[in-house]
Length: 416
Image 1 (cartoon, one colour):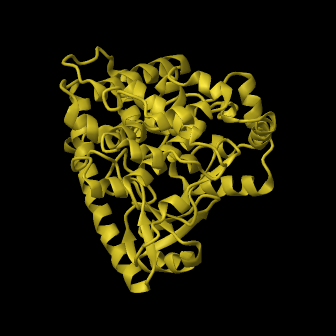
Image 2 (cartoon, rainbow, N blue to C red; image 1 turned 120 degrees about the vertical axis):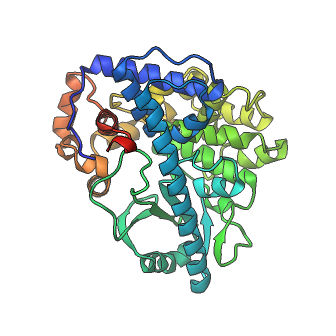
Image 3 (cartoon, one colour; image 1 turned 30 degrees about the horizontal axis):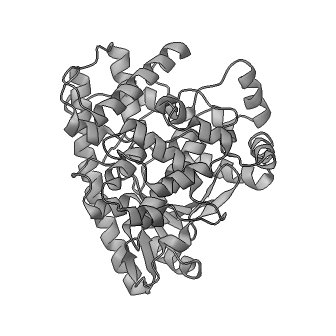
């Protein structure tokens, strides 16, 4: 798919369409209605882009009660077919990783989506599987790196969170959304940190099983999986890039947790506080999927009390579009309300406006490796020029533009 091969209307029209479609599709997942939205042709295309950005195409394909315009129907059918194929690719890759890790005598933990896949929470193709996240002991990181390379992957960017890998035969172009030909990436973690926005929380010690054997391992408990889902969602919320599928993961898993599980999931983390970072994603789950979590666990009440004041004041009032991947405009200082102290707030602003050389170098490498960003002129502009752009209004997000063009250019597989 090539970027910028279609024309977009003005920013105000796009913003309104993205807000409308984001909130309507989220509401449909929580409580499906019988009547299709009265959207125009552009809004139906925006709905496709939003569905892709939030990773919910597979869910919508099986849960919507209405059909919508023909192109929308074809889009969902195509996405479900491709998602099922990608899920099978992922299962095959996980089996290969398990065999290779056993042979190399390396213990790995299959994280997030891979763990949910094994639990059978979703029907085939409902949840996107664009990557496989793995956790390894720091002492075995080099051995895990070697076994991944031997499986036909090339090492990509190493960041403070993980090292990523792409198959050697990765095509230059990408299909729109969950296309079966798009690569399944591997991300290898020796730690599980999130910076919120500068305070680092690491939960690897609670996620790696004490009795882990060679090969692929599950989380030590369902509470450990929930703990990781909440922290990962918190990191994305802090950056204003949460995906609806992440919120749905938490909602779908919540029904399986007991009070004791919530106590474990929300225990003190590396900063010595109750899991305050879990409160914002939990509040969003309660707002969007109230039937999944009708009451707040006692442990979550303690987490809420440990939140920074401005963040605590926003709980339950956040609009999904404003804090999610489908927000059209870039935020100047995302995550500022997550700061516990004035010093943290200043550090957040400084890192955003005046990043150090290491941070800039990592960002450049990530831009080069991310297909949507690598093909955008915005990501290659100097920081001072980007800052000037904010004087005339917040510029659009690259990922939003990329997916909007993909949606406008989409043609059903049957009409290729």
